[in-house]
Length: 269
Image (cartoon, rainbow, N blue to C red; front, top):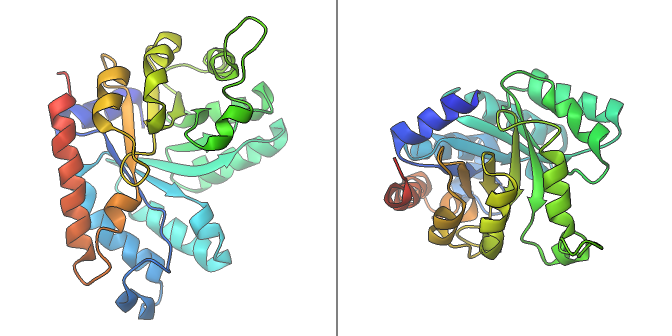
């Protein structure tokens, strides 16, 4: 998916919501467990209910890999079910030496119809660049995360008094461009958004952590939105687990609409 197409979808729909499909069989409605593929049955219903209120879906591959080959089958059925009008993210956090990264890139960006994949960048340029070689595909690189462990590396100060995450993001931005490179920024890092926009004014940010993790959609929107919107705000648990009953899909759709309506207030057309 091209940058302009994504921007157009956001403007036309009036939402920059990304729905996270972190599907855990222990949390889905019990009546689905008798289905041939409970994970896909759940995902299909969630997608049908939320499609009009979002522009992207993020599939966290760990929730599928945990179930072996059956999990991978559910993942593939899910990503192929999502229409091409929506931006499809493989939240796989890959990153390795060049030839290995090349194989990961083929797996997710060619063999599977994902538009993008999340990347852990700390092995350097040769671990990231293989994901930037496919037209219309994106690398979404971990920039500044919300987890407590971010202080161990990302928030460490360098000799020039800048933080490591600043150096990493600035460096990576030279390897790609705003048409094929996004950055993951945790929603609870809202104090850093203005600084992040100074570093990469044109790139999209994928922002997890709104909803169950407590990130503020208003703060993110006010501090991180750029002239092209430049945001995909991911909500997972707060949408997909809105109900554990037969009305789970309806409730998910209502919660997605709630977030989309909030986003309409912040969009600067």
